[in-house]
Length: 154
Image 1 (cartoon, helix red, strand yellow):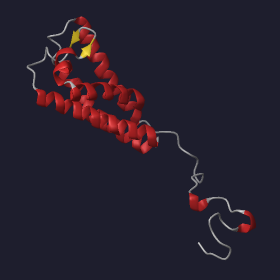
Image 2: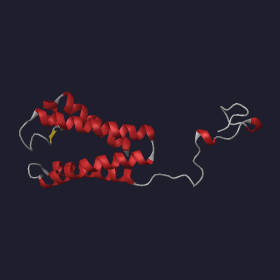
Image 3: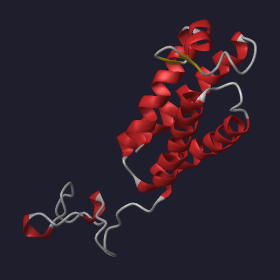
């Protein structure tokens, strides 16, 4: 789920940051125009949207690389904080769109909310007492822990 969110964040974030006017005129592509029909062009706001998506890309990639449930949930919370108001805005402003644009907006924006919520689900847990750290590693031969000299305490 985090990978799908990262891919969408990369597309929007890079496009809006690098070519804000093109993003405004042409997003989401394929001959559709979901941004320009909402209001006048403002380069500052488009670049801010790009930066926001790039920050969501960063946390999504971090969550993928670390692959820890707590970080996945943090990424999910970040995406929800953005995606819920984003979905609510577009749901209330579907008037300028045809049927395909209305459905496309709701499916893509609603999908982002669903993916973010999946990241909030508890991850797999290890049974109690199975978490092993370096200090708890099995003793080496002779009863001395790895990295310790004979007679060393701790």
